[in-house]
Amino acid sequence: MQASIQTPQAKARHALPTATPAGPATPEPLDLLEQFGATLRFGRDHEIHAEGDAAEFCYRVVSGCVRTVRLLEDGRRQVGEFLLAGEVFGLDELDTHSFAAETVTETVLRRYPRRMVEALAESRPALARRLRQLALEHLRVTQERTLLLGRKTATERLASFVLEFDRRMPASGRGLLDLPMSRTDIADHLGLTVETVCRVLAALKREGTIQVSRTGLQLLDRTTLLDLACETRH
Amino acid sequence: MQASIQTPQAKARHALPTATPAGPATPEPLDLLEQFGATLRFGRDHEIHAEGDAAEFCYRVVSGCVRTVRLLEDGRRQVGEFLLAGEVFGLDELDTHSFAAETVTETVLRRYPRRMVEALAESRPALARRLRQLALEHLRVTQERTLLLGRKTATERLASFVLEFDRRMPASGRGLLDLPMSRTDIADHLGLTVETVCRVLAALKREGTIQVSRTGLQLLDRTTLLDLACETRH
DNA sequence: CGGGATATTGAATCATGTCAATTTCCGTGG
DNA sequence: CCACGGAAATTGACATGATTCAATATCCCG
Image (tube, rainbow over all chains, first blue to last red; front, side, top):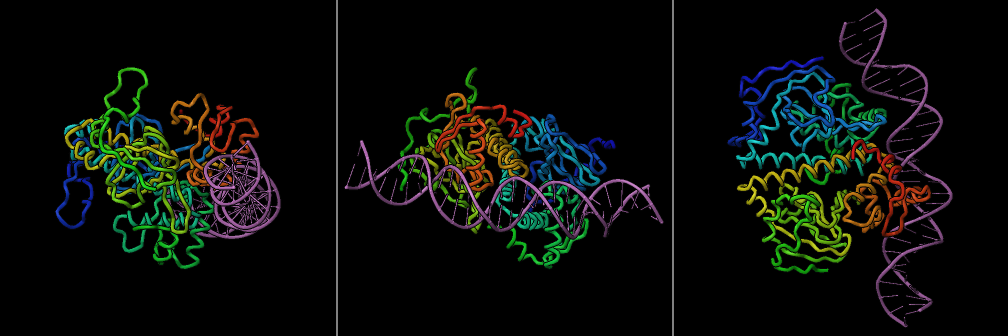
C-alpha cells in the first residue's frame, strides 16, 4: 500500500497538543517546522522507514499508532516503543534510524525534514534546548525500560506497561483505554512471548485488577497495578 | 571515606582524549568547561551522587571506574553502565539524576557545574550541538541494551558485554582487558544472577573462546564472540 | 456465513534462578 | 614470609517462571 502525500498547507492544523493544559501556553519551538511539513497517510502495518535508513525525516503522529522495531537475524524482534497521537519519532537519531518504524493501525503522519530542524537549531537556542530535552526524555523512558526488561517479572512488566499507556493515552475516559497493537507487539515490547502476555492478562483479569478485550482495556484496581509495577515515583 | 577536592588548576591536564586519534583534532566544545572543573578523588565503592539528587554537577572519569545504579524497593538492582577513563556521566539528565553513581575502584574525577554547561550552550551552537549528540549516543547505547535485555540469552549477553568492553577499554593490548567490577556488578548490568555470569564465563572459557581470571579477561576467539553477540553491525 | 488471522489455553520442557556448599583470592597481622 | 579470615567467585543440586509446541476458541472482514 502506498502512502498519499500532501504538500504543505493548513499550518495550525497539526500543531502539538499544548504541553500545559492550563496556564499560558509555552511557545513550542518545534512549531517553527510546521511550514516544512508534509502530511502522509498509511494503512495498517506499513513501513514508514527501515532500520539503517538515512535519517532524512522525522515525524509527528497526527492520528493512529506507530511502532519502532529492531530485528535480530534469527527473527527475534524488539519493539522499541509505541507512538500515539501528538508524539514525535525519528528525531532522536544521529545519521541513520536505529529502529524501523511501522504503522500499527491506519495512521496520519506529519513529516519534517531533519536537515531543516538541525539548521534552525543553529541559530535558535530555544529550539536547540528543546531538541536536547526531547532526547533526554527519550533517554529516560528507555532507561526505565532497561530496568523493566532487566529486573521485572512478566506480571510486573504488564502492570508497568498498562500504567504507562494509561498515562499517555489521550483523554479516553478514566482508566478506559484501547490497545491498538496486537498481543505479539506487546510481547516484543516487553521481552516476553505472546502466550505469556495472554496468560498474565488473563490472570490480572481473573483477580479483578483489569478488564480486557481484544482491543481495549480498563483499569479497575489502580492500587494493585501500581504495587505490581514497582514504581518508585509517579 | 571522604573525597579530597582540589580547586581549579592545571587546565590541559584532564582534557578529553582526542576523539580522532589521527588527523586534525576536532575542537571539543566541552573543553570550554575546563576552567570550572574541580578534581575529586574517591576510594572504592563510594557514592558520588544518589538517585534523585538534584543534577547539579556532571563528571568526567580521569582514572578508575564508575557505575550508575538504580534499585527497586525489594533490593533488585540495575547497573545502568560502567564509565571508564575519559568518559562523562551525569550530564544527560533533566533536573535530577535518574541513577545513583558509585565508584567501582579508586577513582579520580573531574567535576563540572551543569549550570555552566547549560548557560554556555545558550550562546554557543557548537556546544549545544555537542550536548545533543552526547545525549543521542547515550540513547543509542541504551537502546542497544534494551535489545540485549529483552531478547538475548545469557551467553549472548556476556558475549555482547565482553565485546563492548573491549571496544571501549583504553589501549590495553589486543584483546586483553581488565574487569574492574565484580561479577555481581556484571550480573546486575546484564539482568542476570552472579551464578549465571560465573557459569557462562566458565563455559566460554572451557570452549576456548575467552580466558578469564577474577579481574581480567582475554579474548581468544573473536569470531565466536561476534557470532554469539548477534550483532547486526560493527 | 465462512475463513484466516489473532488470541487463548494446556501440557511439557528448558533456561535461569535459588539455595547451599566449597574454593579461591587477597589483604592483614603475627 | 606465612597463616588467618572474610569477601568474592565458583560449582552443584534442585526449583520455577517463562518458553515452546500444540490444540482450540474467538474475532473480524469480506
